[in-house]
Picture (cartoon, rainbow, N blue to C red):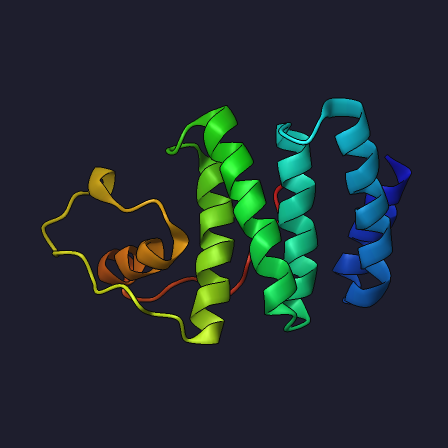
Length: 140
């Protein structure tokens, strides 16, 4: 898909503002072709959110991450690696905003007991990893 590839090249060059219209067009095309609940739609939502996130446009990025997360959880289940990628990106968004509302889980909590909303997930991540990764991720 040409629009996606152009957006990806601009994103990789750090030209985020110029990448946005290409990824928006790709999102429209994918939604039209595959539907609003397809995993390809979720991929584009995540990547578009990442562009806004990188620009500090957090209020625009958050609903896109949340929609991508909902699609992926429904389609792939809560333990799929692509779900974890979107959770990671949403948690990093909350981290940069200083949104640590949820207390840490018990150190004895298993990874299977982790909460599934991103704010709680950030607290869970802090308990187990002690230091979240410092870069959000695109899903290829």
